[in-house]
Length: 100
Image (cartoon, rainbow, N blue to C red; front, side, top):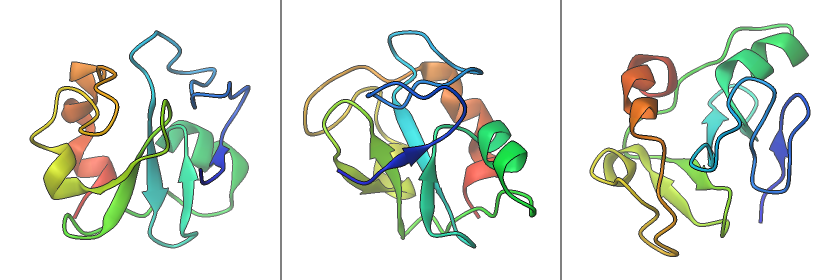
């Protein structure tokens, strides 16, 4: 499974900012090409703002099983298509931060 970077990240990718049972989605920064627990962690740990990925690119990682998916697939999911672990439904509110 790709590494999930963030502040105080656990094995499923939960961080200081988002740490409930369903906060297991990591997003890829288009500039870094690395997965971060959230954009706040990314912005605290790098010198540039989080860069969104295209919806058609692999840019979402399930922290429970390591399944990578496109933004297009993720946008239709309430749980991981691979392991069925539920995702935080409020993550979709941040669509414009993570996807272009």
